[in-house]
Image (tube, rainbow, N blue to C red; front, side, top):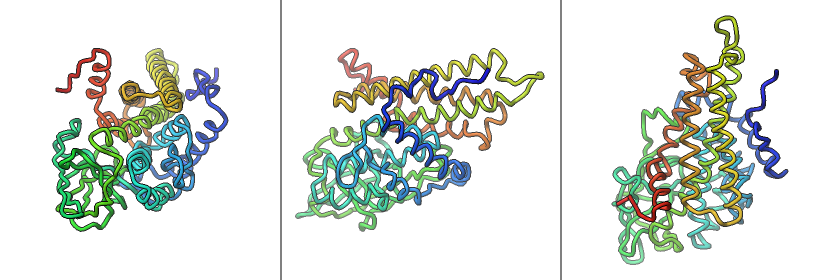
Length: 388
């Protein structure tokens, strides 16, 4: 009896329109041609392939859910499907696209001046420039309100001093959106590469997201003109609004890693023989596969529902937290379970499973840890904040 396609066990395709299916097919083909032949080497050597940025820009993947300035204005669901296919290749690839489009570009698109938008968005959309997003600090991750980076007025200029940590794309970025504390609250600033006093160094010896650039940013009395500030963002609502955009992509992206694990494991289990039969025929193996497929498809339906809400303009942050908490948590459990089916083979880069599991350890933490999302949901349920 032929196996059922794990990607469509519930007839999910029928819930998508022709354009959404076309975008998914295009991104899947890009990953198959440009990423899969090289991803093991990139991960093993810690290489982040910047040369893919213009190719992704040509496909319209960078800032694809934004409108104008060279952006394609795709639907939220189409963007989510693209994230899923990208992360099926590697979480680092989806992280690049998320940071470029949902953090760097969105911060400029949503809060920037017309001059800032015209200067940066077309190049960022084309992938000829790369952006990063400097919010997290060494001592302030889940509590960005405690940030120490400061911006002080000096005549018509701003002078920024501080440190940002765990910044995706940091050392390869042409422009950084940096959030700093001012006398009037937290504000965002655009810091171009090469600005005196601004430096970025890569985080060494990573065991996760090895095919992604992760950096520390240092700002030592970085002097910026007045028009470097994002005029439309005041207070924490600015950076948090950007994070909600990125988290939405993670809701979908984590499922791509889960699907890739499940597909690789189904293929392995059908050919790996023990006790004179393929291990796919054993009850315990089938139980594991069934549970993985169940959680994967539940996650797909949740992601699609949130995508339709976002396209309708009714998605709220608590709903994004529900999606991120569930789908990343289940994706990493799927990866770990699949590793047990592969046995010793599961710890090598010949198969994608442990690479995805290692990557998902980071995805579980960034853009809000699972605990933070639990407390966000708890606050929505009880009306009481447990953060303080």
